Every structure is written in C-alpha cells, then in structure tokens.
Image (cartoon, rainbow, N blue to C red; front, side, top):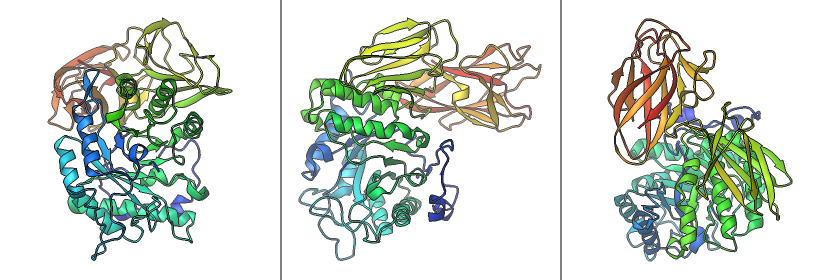
Length: 540
C-alpha cells in the first residue's frame, strides 16, 4: 500500500479542475500541466514506513528513523545531507473512529506525543513529516481507519495545524457509485482543501495522489493538474518480476513529469525481499533516470552496508534531483534491452542501459541519439563503478541480467559546474542557435524590453561565497546591464558591454553567496534594449 501557485496568485476557484476539463483528451505532445504550490521542484526524497513495518508503526519507530536519517554518517555524509527530507507515516496512526467533534483522532498508545508532537520532533532536526489518509470512507488496512470522504476541509485544516508537510491520499473503500468523474472530484476536493488550509495557516502540504489507476480509472490527464506526485501503478513488491513490470509501466509516462509534478512508481524496495544487489541498483538507477520520488521503504536501522551505500550514491541522486526536471525518455527497446536518456541542467545527459532480460547483453546507443551536441569526444562517467572513459560517439556496455549501467555523458573538457541558458527558465526571450560559437545546443536571445530573465537552478555542495560567470555576446556598442539575484535576494547590477559582434563571446563575473543544496540564479534585463545573448552560467 505504497504510495500545490507559480505562487498562488489565482483564487482557489480558478484552480479548481472541473470534471469537463478532466475529460478533455490530451495529445501526447501536450506539455504537462501541474498544480503549482512551490513544492516538489525536484522529486521528493525521504522515508515511508509501510514496506518495512506496515501497520506496526509507532512514534518510537518514526523517531528512530528520523534520528538515523539526521545523524548516521554513510560514506562521509548523512542521508539528510544527501537530500532525504520527508519522514512519512503510512496507515494505522489513527483511532478506528472519529472523535465526538467529528475529527480524526490519533492513537495515543502508538503516538503518545500526537502527530503535532512528532512533527515538532522531526522539524527540530530539519526534516519534514508526512501522514497518510484515504479518499474513501475507510483506509486500506484490513482494520479500516476513518477515511476523509466528506471531511476534506476539516481534515486538511487539522493536518495543517499539526504542521504536517506531506499527505499521501489513498483510494480504498470508494463510494459504491464511484465513477471516473467522481474519482476526479474526490481527489480535487482534497487538493482544494489543502490549498484552503494553507491560506488559513500558511502550512504548505505536498499532495501525493495514490489512486493507482484502480478499477480501470486512469490517473491521466487529471492527476498532474491535481497533485504534486501520483502513483502510476498498483503496489510494488520486493521481487524482480514486480519491479520489472512497474518500470515498464512507468517508462512511457515522461510527458507528464516536470518540476512540481512527478510520476510515482512507488517506494524503494532496497533492503527488502528477494532482490539482489544488482536488482536493487537497477531500481535506484531507473527511479533516477525516470525522475521518480525516492522514498525509502526499508527499516534503515537494519539495512546492510551495501544497501545503505546504494541509497547514498550521490551521483545517482544528482540525476534524480537534477533541477531541469525532465524524466528520461526511452530511445530503444530490443527484447527488454532498453536505452533511456534525460537532459540535465548543465548540458550533460544521463543514459541508462537497462537489461530486464535474463542474460548478459551488449546495449548500445550514440551521443547523437541521446541529444548531445557535436564534439570531438565525450566523457562517460559510470555512476556505479565511478570510472570514466572517453568516446568519439559510441555509448555501449556489456550489461548483466537485471542490471543497469548508468552513465553521465558530457563533452570532454566541459565543466560540470556549467549550466546552459537554453535549459534554464526563460521569460521574455527564446533559445536560438543563429550565431556560432555557443556552448550546448544554443543560447538565449532576450526580448528588447525590461524584465526579461533567464533563471538557473544550481546546486552547491556547501553554503558560502562563490563566483558566477555568465558567458554572453552583445553585438551592439551599448552596454546591456542586468540584475543578478540569488534565491530572490537583493540584486547586483552586472554590466554586459558590447563584444563587437554577435558571434563574439565574452564573460561577465560577479560573486554571490549560495546555500547548501538547491539555489536559483536569475539574470534580469533592466533596460529597454533587453539583455545580451546569454550562453551559459558557470558557478565556482
């Protein structure tokens, strides 16, 4: 039973998804729509207890897991430092019946501090707390705890007052007359309730839809308009056949994923069941290439060193958490020997050579096929062996049965701290490739107006001052200054004087202070001429 406002500037009513809109067919080429609440800009990472202890969950266990994520050092860093943030309680935290006021009641024998008390404990460690609920009359456990159907507003407000950060919303014990339209309405009602609770309390809650395509009701196209993440299959289990099935079901859904909205093929089973180490590495690799949430589903305090090493692979995590937020697309499938690739924010590509068959096989593709710009050679970094090699274009490996080779591909000599402008967020401008000499696949040409910007999302290993270098071209004789701001802070004016011609590139430099982890860097035009042509940002 495994598993919200580009800022809200529109009213809740304007955000409401109508049933009629949900029924409109969506062409395969239509970009993903999402409910924007500023959350889940990269796939959520954390822990969920269900696969480890199921209904035998209690406050002591959740505190033990939070402590482990916060303090246990694995290969030099804690899981929290690697990005695992959410500590999520699944079913069975409530009493069997609501209280006299009709509210959900916490089982105090299991959670003596209450959900709010546990939230305080988790928040003190810099982590976030999640809870589980159901869109029907009762939850999914055989004993059945109160569902939220008909109680959406009251329950959402209660969770917000408890300072809950994440809510997984399941789909058991639906009304007997349930239909597609009524399913959409049930999940939309909770979305609107969470938004209303946020407006009342200020507490943002990540909304995880766990409808799973039950009873033949597709999660698409409505789920990406309603939640931050949504289950794409029924429950995962810790065996290879089930894992292979779920990967196959999730691969074709790349069109729906984007920052703030993610396909969810369910929790990680690393450390559980009959999976081999090879199969566990495949799950972590494929979840990363598919930009899936990374929610650990094993008792971390009992996990082996090998399992913890898999969960701590920062190179693979960086693929999953890449700020460009593109799910990998399948390029080929030859009898279960598959190639998937995804573009990364700095211009690199991630490539998975995935062998779901039962025999070792050579799997190949090319730099051109994965979308790399032409170059004399490329560097292939194996994210499991940590070895690197160069190639003039062929990307190939002998892949054992059930294994995945995961490469990060870059043009040889290209810095890993480079963030291409054409891959960033662009406002009042466009990516183009008219003038020669650019890096990556192009550059950004600003509109001739004030206010246009390019905004990159960059990652820093630690907090502190660093250098920002912006490569640009300005074929005029007039300076085109821009405001450079970091994380929405006070801007610094940087000059971009003429370079003599549009194919002639120069670098403008400034310093900035970054936070550890994810940061935004925005270059905003401040004159009517707009900004210069911008090629890339380098950090450090």
